[in-house]
Image 1 (cartoon, rainbow, N blue to C red):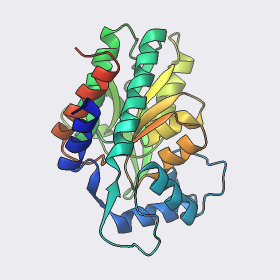
Image 2: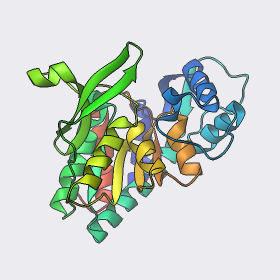
Image 3: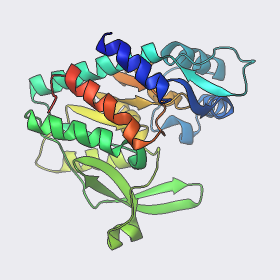
Length: 271
């Protein structure tokens, strides 16, 4: 069996593709919110097209493999593993190009509990291959609107990957990063790049607000997207995001390790 075939079987077995934990009801709600231009669903993207809820669903069916039937309103989403693996290949190809060009790279995540290790492994491999892994704006304040109101956060870096922490726990130095879909962290990081003497990123790697926010500002970006997160896929369809890998982004952290190995091998970056 080929590496691609083994990866297709793996992502289905652990629930990263195939039938995933993402609820259909939640996905439909996010499609409606995106169509209504709700900032919670846009992740920093300013769509050029109209994108009504039906069009969003159609795009997600095309890019992820979810049901295109508006009458399907309950149960779990389904992500096509073939689309996942094809996107992983494209993701790896773009990383290989970054190494070939020695591009500075910025990595960030809004899901640090789940995806930090995935991105950190990429950061280590890119750095070892000669790419500068950027860490601009460390310690800068980022005030993010949450369901509990505006909360103060600070930008931090762990093993070369950007994330945000709530301000008070960061000062105590023991809280994990916060879950956020906000584009504000990447805007702060990119503003720090522009204000400093260092380079701007040639590539941004991340999810949610990181990939959409960077793409909206004209930076080449690649990342991961779940079936209830239409913004990265719309960004890709409109040419603002280069690659989006459809998969469940809230699984156990260890489940992403084989994906890391697969991507690094395909990019000829295996350590």
